[in-house]
Image (cartoon, rainbow, N blue to C red; front, side):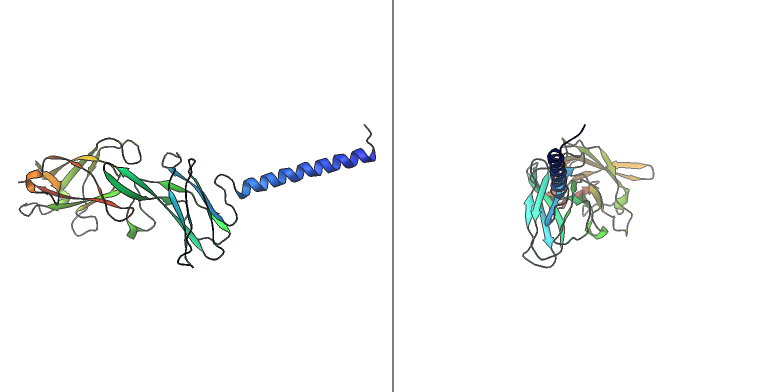
Length: 257
């Protein structure tokens, strides 16, 4: 088929325009996609461990060069956030959510997919809400809660590592997931894990404890450390208390008397 010169010119213009629009669309999608990076912005998505989006989490682009230059944003219904960065600085992102649970208010830290700093050009940083696992460094501890144990003044138990604790979830965990029964013992004496149970998924538990040595197994009475001994029982409903932002702990006491 033969085309006139004018027809060929119009076809070339149409083809060029179509290609240009497609390129612009691709660039726009790449520049500001759902979770892709956008120049001059910190962007990303926050989900729970199952991949469901989390709405209402606050993300901060912490500026390591300017004290009061750390903008923030809150995730939308799809778990997406986008933060416009200042013109000066280097940044790393952090994220938290605040949850009311069994009469307590907890501030919970979220886990980024990268701890690397980035420039004013921007970067994509996604976060996951984890109930357990080690934080960025060993000195920062774990995402899970801590049970600290103490013996009664008149107890004859000297080695706490011979006490076995059983924690049975009462209802769902703080993230809405189903918990599992935990059977735990602390570390040996003179170690950093002595007298503590670490990295427990945050929830409400029915707790019991037994002392085991040789062929002896003896149920213990337990309770909160700051309660009178008359309130200590063989089974106890325990909640963790929020301490520093991102941390929760329960101080427990036991006795064989």
